[in-house]
Length: 139
Image (cartoon, rainbow, N blue to C red):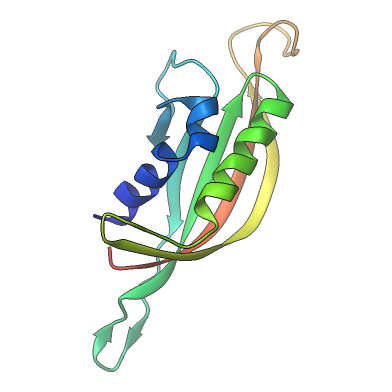
């Protein structure tokens, strides 16, 4: 199991996360028209530390998790569920994850469609963007 599969499995196995997003967890981009709330994930950096005998098997990978919702409170709750799920160590399908470090959380959002962006008009989507440094072994 690789890093992407392991992270996805952890989130889909989490009642905290699936109670909010069900199965709406995607890598890279949120599918157009997909209902909210939802999570998108992307690897920001994945250094491969080396030693004299080659590449080290354990490393930190920086993961950005974007938590999309119609309200700020729902986006914050989803960010907390994401952190609570990915922060502790776990082994999934033989893939070992260590403690994850939360390296920042940003309050973002965006206007969608036309017209003035207001929460009541439904043209603003709230987003909590969370950076995690996730220690893991292997690809």
